[in-house]
Image (cartoon, rainbow, N blue to C red; front, top):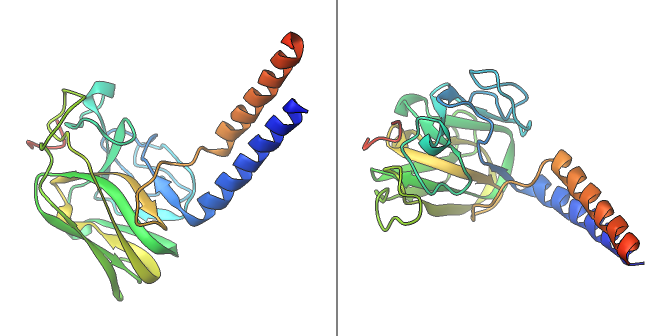
Length: 226
């Protein structure tokens, strides 16, 4: 009976996570290559180094880069990132756009570290066109009150989000290009979250529950780029 309840609970957790994932999508950029253009990593394709991630239908402009923390062997001059060890960075203010063709609603959010004040804008058209649905204002806070990881100049991360009405299809990060790092970009919520485990991870978790049950029975620049 205990084993059955345990497995039922695991199945319910998977169903709940799948339902939540349909409404809220979190990009943590893990798996993107160091200094690789993210491109279609989250759009059924690859980054500029041939790596691929989950297909969320999210495409990045060629100005987008993945940066890996120097502590993990990359070239990113940052620390205390919300989800180690890769973040998003834009090189060119004139080409710092994210497109989400299917659209998303409710809100948009992320964690950031920045050496300049900047603005990120949410639009209802692709390529930063159409109506402005919301804006996120970023402060220059990259080195304030840092603790924990001692290596990395950009060591303070702040969560920021905006709620809006309508269907958003693109984000313009141009105001923050060159001076700001992003992590855990979240679609569908004004509060940034953690990435939901991939199906393979859930399968391993369920297998783990099963093995636990069997055991019970037997027992009874300062720059971001370094």
